[in-house]
Length: 136
Image (tube, rainbow, N blue to C red; front, side, top):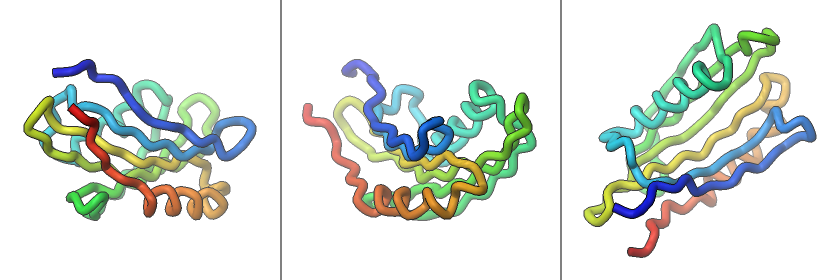
């Protein structure tokens, strides 16, 4: 299997980088079998590395690149500052015989007050997202 680099881009939506859209594609090095497992990893990252507490999760089935996907909304509070946050994402797996699956996600992270302003860009990125597999 090739190296498992994380390939993506982050678009900061404000000067403080508190609000951003990110897209990622990476080899499924953790051998996930469902998009829900990728979504769970996102929540764990918010808890363990982002200091999120008082977490509320909403999930729905959707499609991304004509693949079954999970749409997830996570409302939370920063455990240090008490500031509310929202993490909205769509996650999917693209099966591949050679080298294993590819995990894809498109995510918006913002505050509740910034959601209406940030959502149009997130939706534009989501609509234009292509799940292109690496060559090789």
